[in-house]
Each structure stands twice: as C-alpha cells, then as structure tokens.
Length: 216
Image (tube, rainbow, N blue to C red):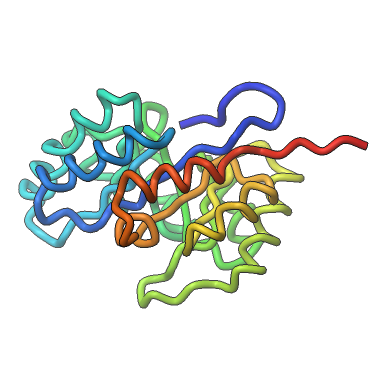
C-alpha cells in the first residue's frame, strides 16, 4: 500500500468494510465497488469470535480482494494476519502499533489510527508505521471535527513522507481531504449505506479524488 508514483498523484480509496457477518455478501459488495473506483486497501473488521472463526472469515474474503490487486488489512488482530492470508493490520494508537511491529515487520503492512494528537502521530511514525490515519471514529463512535482532520492531514502532508490516510465521514469530505494532501481517503458507512447503491456511490467517490493542479 504505497502512494502512486508521480508529482502529486491522485489519492486512492481505503475502504472500511462493515463488520463481517456474511463473507460472501461482503465479497460481492466489494466487487461492486472495485468496478467503479480505484481502491488501494480494504480494512476488514471482524465480529468477536474464536480465533479459528476469525481466520476463516478473513480467508474467505482475502482472495477476491487480493486478486484485484488490493491490500487486505485486518483491524486490530496482528496475530492472525499471516494465517489469514492478509496483507497487514491496522492498529489503534501508537502503543498498539509498537506492540505489533515485531509481529508484522518486515513482511506485512503496519498501519495506525486512533492518533489523538500530533505527538501520537510522530511517535507512530518513529515506531515504523507504514501509514497514519486521521479522522476515523473512536470506539464509541465519536468523530473529531472536520476542520481538525483537514488541519492534521495538511500538516502531515507538508512535513512527513509516510503516507497519510484521511477519513471521510461523508462523500462531501473527500474534496477537502484531497486538497489537504491526503495520500489515501478512507471511507466506510458513508459509502456502504449510500441510498444510490454501492456502484454509484463508489463512482461519486472516485470522481472526487482528482487532484486539481494550480498555476501561478
């Protein structure tokens, strides 16, 4: 999961999939989105279950995602990444990342969100994060303000080389995240619950990802 090459490339989508209850239904929904948009990664969120059950659910989704050239990232379970055939894990907070680095590196992606301050983000970068995510909801569904997310993304894009993922709580947020310099735009319920349907929503999201070059 790396930014596209070139000078200020268009960001790519990072999908926060609904929690897996029916692996076949999720794979079908993702296929609809892949037909309409350029997706870099899918974050797989798993219902609580025994370890073997979690691995089996991930293994059921992984082939169709990876066959499309897309990374499958497991939320919060670095210990099952290898056995599930996934590409990496997404951790919440710098401490969780630091604990998982030994398990994941050098073969798997180690991403991190839940960064509530600039200091947290810098600690995560120093620990070896492959990307940082700003703006996603916390465990109780609380979102940081839109302006705060845009400010954090813009700061990171100007200072650091590690890719930045900006979370869009609504499709209309994508434009501002792109302008701020996000390498990837994460989106979850705003896309999966769009009344127009998955393909139309994904096409709308994709259309908003084009970087507008300015001249002086």
